[in-house]
Structure formats: C-alpha cells, structure tokens
Image (cartoon, rainbow, N blue to C red; front, side, top):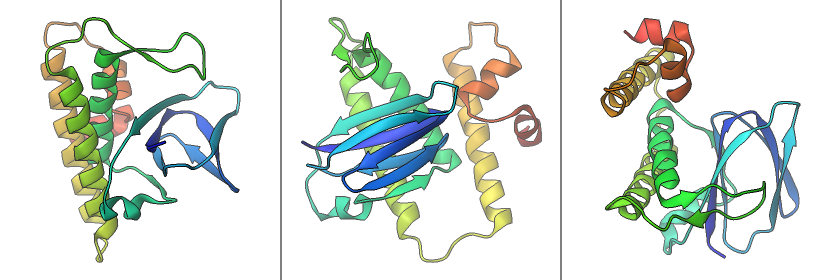
Length: 185
C-alpha cells in the first residue's frame, strides 16, 4: 500500500476516500495516502479518462499531499501528459475497467526511468506551488499558463514532427481550446 495519484484527464468522477466523497473534474488531481481505502464512480454520461499511478515515497515531504485534491496548472498538465505517455510505453492498458495494467514485455530504453522522472517532476512542481505564500495575480497566472501552453505545444510538435496534425489534435493533446491556442500564438 503506497501512494496513488489520480488525475482526471476528461469527464467527471467521484472518489470515495475512507469516510469522504471527493468530486473531481477534468484537470483535477487527488492523492490517496498509503492504507487509505478508496473507490471511484463515474459521473455523467461521458466515460471519464483517468490516470492512476501508484508509487512509494518515504519521508515527511509527502505529508503536504495528505488528503489533498487540487486543480492542476498548465505546467503540471504538461508534466502529466508526459507522465501519461511514459506510462503507455511501460504498461499495456487493462483489458477491463478496474483491472491492473500489465508491464509491456518490450519497453523502450529508459522508459521506467522516464516514468519516475516525470512523476518526481510533477510532485516537485505541485509541492512548490502548494507551499507558495503569495499567490500570483490573474495577469501573472495567465502569463504563466500561456507560456506553459506554448512550451507544451512546441514539445508536442517536436514529438509528432513527421505526422500531419489537425488543430483539434493539438488542442486535445494540450488540454486547451482553439481560442486559448490562438491567443498563445
């Protein structure tokens, strides 16, 4: 029983954590602590897309995440996209909802290390954001989100340079709408 990160990529779910119910929408993350009993229920008619990552981490640094759920910012969403891609390289998705993924028999060189790196980066970014005492104003947040979106799109283009891409694919991969993408560029 280690930690579990739950990231809702799309849709809405309800997470039941011991004695509390936590509704999560697209872009939210939740941390289940070790030994916590939990379950999930989809909300609405559209099936949600959820990433769950189990990991072990010792030390008092993780106390910051106990019982926390929060909306991700653009930098964290970019990191979560990389984490998701790395997970697909390491594991075969489960055959049925609720089943555990199976490690791929052949994995690209360094795939497991990248998975750990992206998870560490996400925890680092999230912990730093949660510990900030002064919250940036709306303009500073908008500029940070726009810069992170531009970085995410550039990374996506570099990863798919040989493929014909549509605007809808770029928006979906970066969890943004057309207007946000046009404004960023």
